[in-house]
Image 1: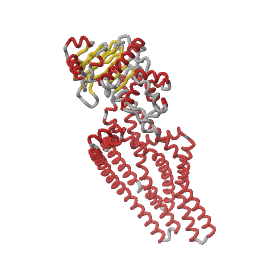
Image 2 (image 1 turned 90 degrees about the horizontal axis):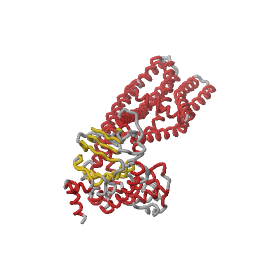
Image 3 (image 1 turned 120 degrees about the horizontal axis):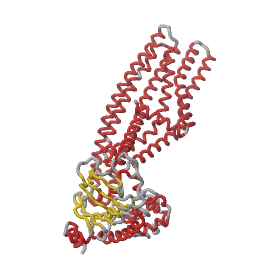
Length: 598
């Protein structure tokens, strides 16, 4: 119940912040409409007694009151809808915005590797859309509470025992709450197969994977696997719905028994001459209304329980992200990134394992990246190159050992401050479906609209003519999510990603983490040559360290320091000449690759 109370009070507080007038108008109209329901029954009692007593004038007045009360009961709640509809939409938007903030709120990638975190986000993404009904449910339930209170008073006037009739609703309410908890547990259990099924749906419908689906004839296989996952999720939900329906039915049976007993009691008293015809009508109508009110309340309570479940998961996500942030900062005050590097970046005894695994992808790494140097990290796939880059960027913290920047532990440098001084191009780059200038300009938000900066960045990326050559130049909308948007080739998207990497003017760390995997060796070499030139300027300006990551040995031979990785360890380090002379792994792989390109 504490979760429900917190969620409801938070909902009301948010509505009041958005608009006090609309909130109070909606509440007032809903309460007035709910009060009109039992008052119409009282007016009917007056009408029947007036007719039975032969008072036509009084009967006409009573009939008019009945009409007004019924009109109010039917229309006031509809007018309330006008007031709360906008509040409900704004509330849903608020939850969407918070989900985006939470998905991006972790200082690193740790939370995104956590299956529980992913399940929370999956359930929330589906359930948040249902919260728009929570405000209506809350207002309607408030009105029902007022209506039931008035009903209880009227029942007590007829006979004190009839006060027990509303209590017959308690089993229904308790059963409804239990039923919703069963459903919520099933939704959580179904989150993982639902997430995997959604992933297969994206694979089956998005343009990127379509080539492989057609080539390998995978459409039926993907559809079959998705069907199996949906069957698992549906089976879990179906069993939960059956159990929930049985619980609600048992709860309703208690009220049906109380309703029948109340009508029987009043009919007996009327036959004995102790009650009027109007009393019988009053009790029959009130009992029917109470039954409808309870049924409606039971039907609406799940919306609030779902709201409480959403709120609880949001609280858990906030807590998880705060915990991750505290672990990342090490509990110390965060320092700003240095204005320039004087010594460089040092890794001492660094070991690393991804969350949820015990296998280390990096082991006992000792490495110094001198200020102003160009460092190439090479090795076969799975050697640990990208894991090392993620530690340098602060996306993860080492499982053991330390990463220091000019002697300061990277844990103690604010993640935002550090990343603001990094320029990077990654292999798994994002295809931002923005205007073309924005797809590059987001690499340095303060200069997102600077045509000069964007043009210079694209020149450094090796394709200054790409954006001017688009149909609307810088203002061309990219991707299929826009009507008339231009779809680019994979290589063109890659050039825009590289342009983003070249936007920042004075980074402390420049990284190219195999963003050119789809290019041939010659094209990659040309790009690295341009990047090395950019690195020299950054080194002079801020002592920047440039890191080039590749599995191609021939393209990084001009680097100041070449680090050779295998099995998560550094097996060799030195410049090209020294490594060739040593005759080790670098020399062997360099020779093998060189032969392949002859």
